[in-house]
Length: 292
Image (cartoon, rainbow, N blue to C red; front, side, top):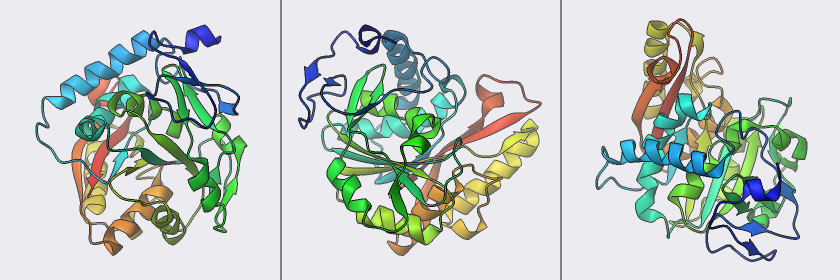
């Protein structure tokens, strides 16, 4: 994919170390992670991608007028035709804070690499068809002081659980830096300590990436995912297992922090691939949750 293919019509080039005025800029002279699943999980064409996600956000926006902006959220990471509408139910709630949120801490599970602990990237920017997103190297480097965090570019190279969230973030936020973390086998306490270290204030958003149950029939999945959502709403992270949520390790960590901080979680959308773009014989569950 050439650079011309990567740029939207409003993209421009900025120097390294400079936070772009928008998230459609190309950052030169830095180490950049190329997209791994553009054209597979979401459209590779910038115009098509914008139009698709804008449609999902428009549909979600009609349901949430005046909704508060969450501190943290859990949203799915399947192909956008399947889980995009559900993810949009969470992302549409960020638009009133588009200029306030300047940092996004994004955690997702490892699908491609056997990983223990939490993998951070050595890159300076992550690339999508909509442009580059600068990484918050200062925060990432500080996290490396924790024993459960280490540089692991291989864990990031082909991982889709973080990548599919990036175009949504580029559309609903203005300028922001990213702290992307791939979570392998890790205790809820280990993940919670990482989140505490980069919790920040109103300028920081926490996003955890997870789908729900996999490959049950439609009615079985609905019942199982409803029960899982009840566990999430009750912050009962100890009851979550990897057959209920593929992002169980980062989800557990977020819910532990929420419990310790006296926060609440609520479900804002709960569907599955049988509701969006797939057959109902075998489905994958998707939920969006807000934590504040």
